Length: 409
Figure 1 (cartoon, rainbow, N blue to C red):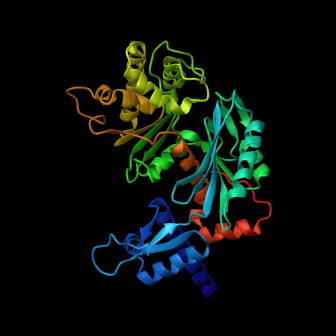
Figure 2: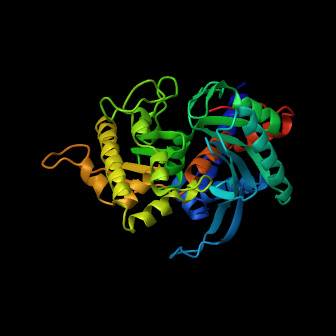
Figure 3: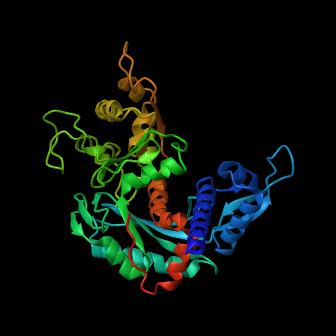
């Protein structure tokens, strides 16, 4: 019995170490053997054995020597394998975005399928199935899809992945993850779009190595948020923490889909900006450039006033967030980027109160990359997490499991 326990402990330690090494390679998008040794505290021979196993599993590749190393023998670089992929899906009211994402957070051949209206759940399944079929035919041999990450602009049940409510899409109690898994024969994990965006920012973006971070994303379906506190994503008692779009910013304001009035996402909308610049349908990805260009022209006073109003309302919401959570950084994504780029100092000034000290004093505001990249990368993190947690065990179960069950966050 003692021998069995010793064997189990060794297996558990090996699994933990394998996970630790893969997580470091993934999050750093490449790392040297010397860096792995320093970061893990493991000796060089152990690191070499773990890397060798990950190479055999097809999850990492060894490449050129680390030429940046100034002293001693150059170290071999370990990089995420481009053949280890996740499928990311982000449906919204006017587009269904699909992409393959490799370990290390690299987006491969993204596709934006525009719709003339909010798609139904069945239409999303059909669209994604068709796009995925085309993607598979163009992949070279040796590539492997680990699963599907589904980013939803709404509330998702963390227990079974059901879309509880996506009001802008008109969805309620929809089992999209299960339907997509049946269609693609892949495990599917679903979560709120802004929450997965926060994960992407914390792992690869402006929030890397930031322990206390708030991510706020503005899209076609409104404004959502994700909160990293003490280096951990805040989920709340039932998994619905981070609904920052429903922060109250104006008394007697516009009716919100949540049933209240004057919520952040009801008062600040992408549609107002689209209308102000007269952007045609199907060109919404050009909204930021269109707004900035129009601000340089004569007759843009109405647009300027709109942006000033949105900045002031956003500042009210962020003051509440900062006072409650005391983050060191706020990352703004989606159309919220426009407000900062249009008036770089206005939001920071509106956040601070002259003559006072407190949580607003040191918070910085950063911008997420333009477009949907953080959402798609974050969705892929949902699919990669079970793999990173237990690399060998996950691949073994995927090979052994003919049915490929749905896996949820």
